[in-house]
Amino acid sequence: MSNPYKDEFPPVREIPLHGRDHKDVLAMMTDLRDREESRWVDGFASGSVYHGDPEHIAFLSEVYALHSQTNPLHADLWPSISKFDGEICRMTATMLNGDDDVVGTVSSGGTESILLAMKTYRDRGFANGITEPEMVIPATAHAAFDKASQYFGIKKVSIQPGPDGRADVVAMTAAINANTVVVVGSAPNYPNGLVDPIEALAEAASERGVGMHVDACLGGFVLPWAERLGYEVPPFDFRIPGVTSMSADTHKYGYAAKGTSVVLYRGKALRHFQYYTTASWSGGLYYSPTFAGSRPGALIAQCWAAMVSMGEDGYLAAVRQILETASQVKAAVREIDGIEVIGDPLFDVAWKSDEVNIWGVLDEMAKRGWSLNGLQEPAAMHLCVTLRHCQTGVVERLVADLAACVQYLRENPDAGSDLAPVYGMAQMTEMQGLVEAGIADYVDKLYE
Ligand SMILES: Cc1ncc(COP(=O)(O)O)c(C=O)c1O
Image 1 (cartoon, rainbow, N blue to C red):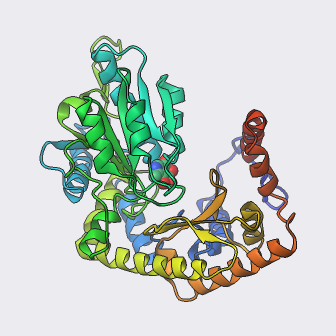
Image 2: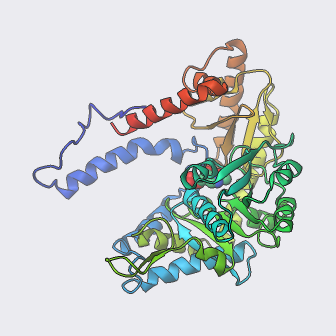
């Protein structure tokens, strides 16, 4: 998708000679915002916006404005941001049943939390004499782990999940060796929304003296409340002794604006492997706990404000609505002939098909305004349920459109001309390089 505004709003290629009037800039930006708002506001998007209530957004924006000039790199100038940072970590650790030993940092998002954790284990491995570090992950783990493998030179040992879609404990245990620095599980994973057998994985890891990272980026701010509401939630957090780190995204179900996540470690000693410090730079003594140098303190402030303004009662009420809506989605999708829900997820509901090309269904749904997510191995698609889908009529619209699109694919098996053929190509190992090059070209287009 290239720039749809090219003609109406000519691209700005040079800094304007004279500064534009604030009013004009704001008018143009408001216009663009208004054009793009309805799809996510009305619940056509999977995941993406997790809260989205206008009053909540206005409150977070007000907090952002209050702290917009802050930068925790200068802790002497803005100790308030360090306080918010520490308290976000503490609140998250407590929610995930970590005792005072569990510490963390606020990062810019789930991917950064995962990258930081993997770098941490790599560096601890180096300190312990492991020169060729490996990570053992289920194939359903987020792409951020593959990214970490590429960025940090950690060998990725990716194990196909069992037939139930969850991590295969026996195969993952067998893959642990003397070079393994970390074992990974998801709570839940992104593709099919299922929680891996964390307890068994953590036991296998700790018996072999290996760290265990639980990626709760998606579920960290849902599962604790789901458990409190009486839903069946498998053990996944710091109550399991072998769990040595976790990631949980405040900018998803924590309901902060985009740009924050929390990475937690059991013990300060492990967290130290994440930090960067130098005493030999001509610019002076320097440190950064995460990857960035300067960081937007305002995002940390609004994250703190989101958490304390939601409160336990707010999170419980939100999760109750989300889980009830997800149950309706699951029940209704199970009624549609030709598609099948994968497992019994709590809120991130995936479905596959033995009868129709599911990526064709994805394309047909897109024509009806939906922005759902395509998945591979198995070919599937999902809806990650958020508060946007809890509005009246959204589930009914989804199910009616989905039933119609599945039926359309039955009658027109080759339908779907956007992502379906690309996914089709990506299934052939020898074509994956070509598809990856095509993705890079697509990204180039986004910058044009
Ligand atoms: C399970 C899981 N881990 C990690 C991530 C990455 O999060 P982000 O997009 O904030 O980098 C996601 C995103 O959806 C996720 O679902």
